[in-house]
Image 1 (tube, rainbow, N blue to C red):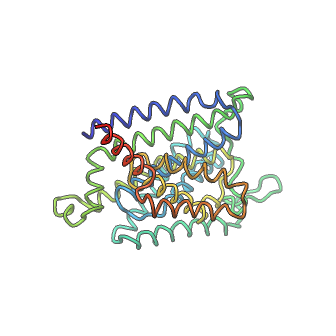
Image 2: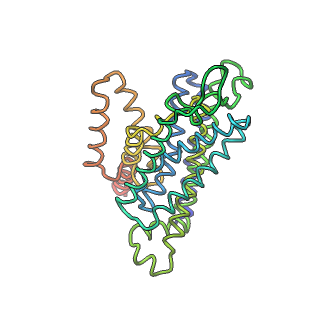
Image 3: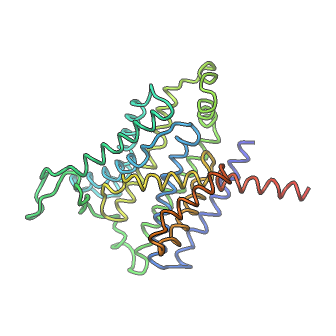
Length: 332
């Protein structure tokens, strides 16, 4: 049964991959391609957060801190060691894994809301360390530069070089396809995790931890595993974000952005395989329409979230699954 579900997931991924490959040639608008690139980045982050939050039931709010660490590590290694972003991107992912393991160790004795409070405190501590960084680390001409970039953000570490590699018309395609590849790799990795033995272990520890531990599952081991395995792609997404915008700032740790991504996960379907991609698409499209209504933008997003929580608590993924079952029953 699980192998059939995995094959189904793989086929859907393949179909979406083909669509996204040809999409820039059908609609080559730079703004559109830029928005889809952001969609790939957020989907990568949420797909990994969904493993921790949705499947393992660990109420971690440190996902954007891991994202920021990956982005800053990618930029700093490139800036201070004069390395290519192609080399520092996977290194940023590894740094994010190490950071995530440290968070996992800090949360070993905690559960439920206490994990949420601790991980949120860690994220806010990193934010404060960045914005209060005023010490002059080096001079760039007559300009004093901070180690993290401070409130101005980390800059001048370069990009992925697509401007030199591609013609002007297709320069925006480079970051698009790079973010797309990372997103699909993260999705495939997620499917293999949740459809395999690790997925069963995570669900057991989430739904009945006492029974799971009595059956021999080591809670400490699996908690550290889930924190580490979900961090690499999140860190890489942060690195792509840094390379795409060519600046890495503390705004990635804003509470509003954290809640925005959390809403995507809830709307898509917490603990569902396809929830991240559905929720990200839904909320980004809604946000695009609401941009013109500046005064009502946040209120509109809040109403959408409330409607899903009340009417469809399992999110878009759960709604589509229920609709599919009803359709099948009617045909029979």
